[in-house]
Length: 235
Ligand SMILES: NC(=O)c1ccc[n+]([C@@H]2O[C@H](COP(=O)([O-])OP(=O)(O)OC[C@H]3O[C@@H](n4cnc5c(N)ncnc54)[C@H](OP(=O)(O)O)[C@@H]3O)[C@@H](O)[C@H]2O)c1
Image: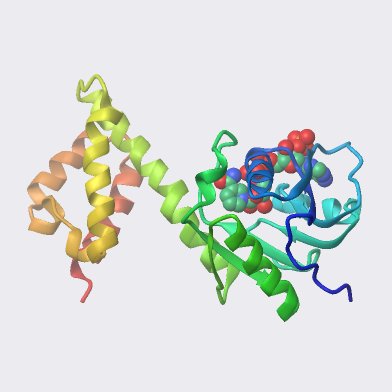
């Protein structure tokens, strides 16, 4: 088993995958003083380095791991096991590919490793980029939490935008954003149940019924209303 290379300014990295996260991560590692090659696209040859970071879709991780020649391989996936790599770092943030290196500062990163040394390497690397490393007991459940906190929130916000547009609001995102921000701040401070306001929290089912009449997507409305009633009634 290859010993984990200690992190130093001279540590060499290959970033495999020039997509959303690979591009931003390469810039951040360079800004942190590391020697970074790439990010490399699918057909490109990958040079030998100390660490290869596989910034590829989850299904491509085994293939990318085979093509990477490095002392240690890591992936960035929240849900994938460590079968094809030595360690993993999942930055708990959403990346579109245009973020500056500072995007990693202050965020969490779920880390794991095959050995204690690999886990330590993952933690050291997360900290070197300004992230706070943490561990999870179940990757799939953890990744579902991330999807609820980001992907599903966007689905709900898109529905809100469509309602506001249908109601004649000209700049729905600008008008709704302060409400969204305050709700997130209240949730962060006190949790969802204590932060719940509105007709369901007040038991005003007549108003909820009028909202439902106006909703195009009654499946989404009913699912969210039922979940919100359950939240209100939670002990
Ligand atoms: N984006 C995020 O917000 C985010 C957040 C946390 C973690 N992650 C994790 O980061 C990883 C990458 O996600 P992403 O959002 O950056 O994906 P992405 O934007 O789809 O980029 C993936 C890149 O991998 C390349 N690729 C595919 N197969 C390859 C191979 N065998 N060898 C080399 N390159 C290959 C693709 O290029 P081609 O099109 O040329 O094949 C593409 O540029 C995933 O594990 C994901 O779970 C992403």
